[in-house]
Image (cartoon, rainbow, N blue to C red; front, side, top):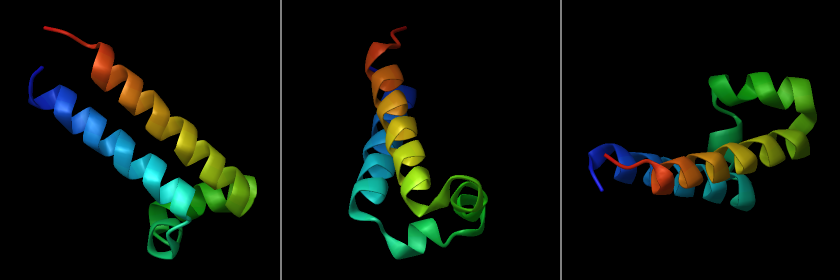
Length: 64
């Protein structure tokens, strides 16, 4: 595994954790507010959970 793999795994864990714990500061960030407006708070949490899971899978699968 190289640095990119660890970075993707770390980003995935962070994003899944932020969605699961419903971190206020994460969901109130200006970039996250776009998804909160479109999907609602619960939908944004589901979106970020799925995005984090995707990052985790990609980080574990990619090999060089």
